Image (tube, rainbow, N blue to C red; front, side, top):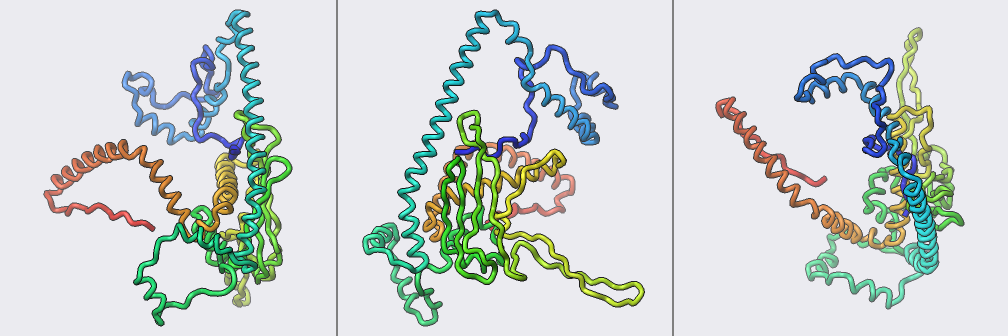
Length: 407
């Protein structure tokens, strides 16, 4: 697997360890002033509230301290330099062994990639047969139908009566499987969040979603469309590239993505919307309507991936861009690793049940600790409620717990 973002800023600064901390303390700044509250450092009991107040009022001071601490990470404490020549020689030998290990790790990742490509060639005929059935160009064999029906639960008699009822809705019929890819994408949570109501008209014309490996590490997602009223593209692709150098563990490192330009038909661009605003002339008092095109949310923004932050971007802007880069990469991985291989399971919704089971298994590891914490919190909460009732002589009704509803 690939590492999402190589140069992503860490959320928290790593504190210096004893081995890399300088013997003498580095000054925070030659021009920095001492904190205004002297009692913080003088009192034996450290006043955390006062310290938090000072840092809250001086965000630049916090940033400065973090920057200084970050500059200490990795700085030698002099311990390695103080070792005797024989020990230094052994340390150098250990580094040499580690280099051999890194070479094997890189070789392992390369062989894993080649194995993925080998089996992808075996998967391809199955994907082609799937596309033919979805688009009405072929029908599944009797054996394929029988194998698929083995996993289905038997229908109840009531369900059969409902289908014969004249008042029931008519069945969707016709060649292939209508709206297959749109339905599958809407069941994949990360993709569903990107699809707007306006997008659905265009995504109904999706005939296939494929992927292919590049000659160098990377992959391309290919979206195929039938003739539609929104754009003239028959295919829209998005390519994910990796860096030439491997990561620390031999993993491929994601670099950037590029998407095709969509040739929108006049007035059909789903990535923008038209805002209308009235303007009044001060002299003539006449009004006019000014139209302005502004970007809007759309799944098709997926094909215009964000660019990496530059030195001109401030910390907040850079952090936001990095989050969008990581999300963009994860969406590509979800399509490649989840949607394409198991498209029918996403169409029927069965894949959702598998993901929920995996999440339940993961969360189950922390249930016991969470329950204990909840018990402690509930006891504290009960004490607070009792004190409130005592203070108000019981005139305030006890507030019931809010009901947790699934949206």
